[in-house]
Image (cartoon, rainbow, N blue to C red):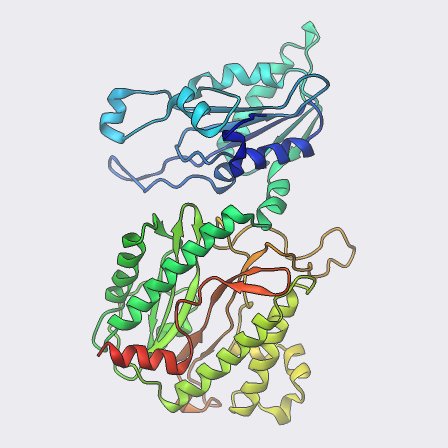
Length: 451
């Protein structure tokens, strides 16, 4: 693999880690995402494939990475196929690195025009014992791989052999991506800070009578103003009853006085996602019922955050939050303690799912719902996997109360979620999104000062 300054980049180190896990002499292939037409001659904003970028740091479309594992005296190789330099197209579409610029700038051993891919792959796969690629990840790549293998097999009379086995490359990368290095943690901290600043701006700017999309515009303004390339996902700005719809994102309703606004939004910074939810009163002051439910969710989040520590099972986070929420549901009359019995009995009966129907978090990284198994599949009973330092995840309990004959009316149409991003450390966790206030006092003070 490449030595010198380029090899010190995290991408080169990741590629080296992959080839060390491969069978000697094997070949790995990983493509990036295609451009997608939006309408007419306009494309959607281009976003690279996360796996490809994780190993390459290269963000141009029409690119493919090939890794060849060392075998005997033959060193490992990293090869990029990409678009050629084309000054005419660069006038219209912008700068292209070209193969030589990509090779020197990104630390690849070799780089070739993407138009030469099919011809060169037959040689690269000749006599390779195994092929690693993203099985079933995309029909186009599956078809290309089939064509390359067919071309190699056509040379069998000359003694050339095609790979005898295929392996799912993404399973290996999932485990790598689950543990964040210092470079990734720094990017995620920046994404968390920008996302938190956007929530601050939205809180300060929210007024009854605004439309949800006006609050969304405040978020997007702060994302871009601070250098984030995109929102990490479509922002949720849900007022009143819309907050009881988990994935609401029409963001079209007029916010009314006395309602809560649930905002779930985060930016993407240099390929890494922030993911924050805050819930606050449109007029800057919680009603007694809103405050009661809000503080219940806040206590549940505190219990969940306390469960984030190396060696703890991932499921402990949800279990801690759920016990606090169910006990609170009993106290507030949302669940009937006499009918259901203990907190454990209510959880076993899944009685809580009427008001809390999702998990308490997910992995976070290059994708908002990032890759990696939640259970240890190497064991027969597939227990919840233990947390390790370097894992990144969200912690996001909530409560959603729709109207019902057996539901106290003061809680109707109140939806609350509180979400933060954390990195597991050697002793507990580091919260990346604490720039966005979440206590009742902090929120009310901030919003009243902005009036």
